[in-house]
Each structure stands twice: as C-alpha cells, then as structure tokens.
Image (cartoon, rainbow, N blue to C red; front, side):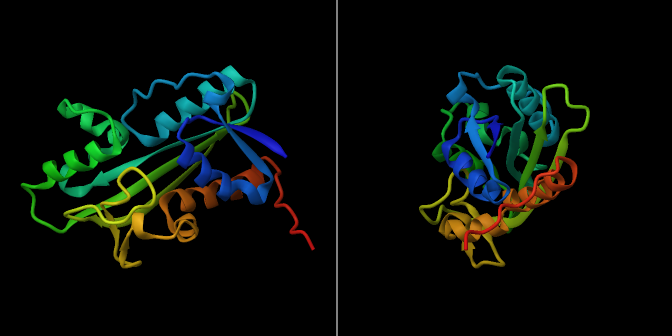
Length: 209
C-alpha cells in the first residue's frame, strides 16, 4: 500500500479522504503524526493554498503528499468566507471553532434577503515530491443554500447550515456514505483518482473473492 502524507491534522477530513482513496490502495497519514507543522496559507485561492500545503508536507516528510483546501463560498457575501472558512469567526474577534464560524456566518447574512445561495468548494492537490513539476489538481463544487439555523448532528464545519435541495436535507443530516458519494470532496477525489491512475500509474485494488 502506498503512503501519502495528508497536509492536514483534521481527523474528520482524514476519515473522509481515506474512505475515498482506499480503492487505489493508498494509505493517508496526517502530517501531524510525522511531527510536521501546518503550512502557512497566504493565498486568495483554494488551489494556491492546497499546492503550498502539499509541497510543504512533501518537503518535510520526503513522501508523496496530498493536500485539501476547501471551504464555503456564499454568493451574498461575495464568495466569503472562502479560503478563510476555517477561521472566519476570528476575523470578527471571536474564537476559532465550528460553532462560532456558523454563528458569525448567520450574523453576516442577516442583512441579506434569503435564499442564501452557496457552494462548498474543494481543491485537491497531489505531488510526488516537493518540487514535482506536474502536480495533480482537481476541483469539486457542491451547490446548496444556507439555512437560517443549524440542522443535523453529523459532519463538521458548516455542514449543519448547508442545505442541499437535491437531497432535501442539510449536509449534517446526510449519511456519511451518501456524503462521500456526492460532496465537493467526493467530486474532486473522483477527478484526482482518475489522474492518479493515468499519470502516476496507480490501479484499483481487486475486490476479495
């Protein structure tokens, strides 16, 4: 099984991505488990930050690396919180937490008329080494609307506020198995897996008889 360093210490993100990449025989280990600190994320786009994180993890581990930069883009807020999704509340002097991020988002949306259209965005980048001249890049987008109050107990981040009309539920109300098939991260992963097969030559594992 090939090991990739995940440029994140988010245990829930690791669980989601590991499930998506198991078919290729890839084992993900967090950079934190290898003693690698998180990289700076100074750029305005998901792709630039993901590439920076992947190169950072590969450089310090000496292993291939995978980075995910994802977040919520709300149309009424001009695409915010965007790349600042994970620390959105800190921009308003509040603590960094999922609960505070959700509260601040609703406060910022209050002056705007509903429906509040939004999308989850995910950029996935894989590099074979820190200086890989051909990084693999995939993007996934998941359209929805922001609810007036949180619903559901699953997921993380903005999942309780993100309503998916096609599913008739918030992301936090969806079974993990369904989320892993239709989410922004699932869509980006499907693209990246195809690139891993074509460019890195990885092949799916055969199912046990």
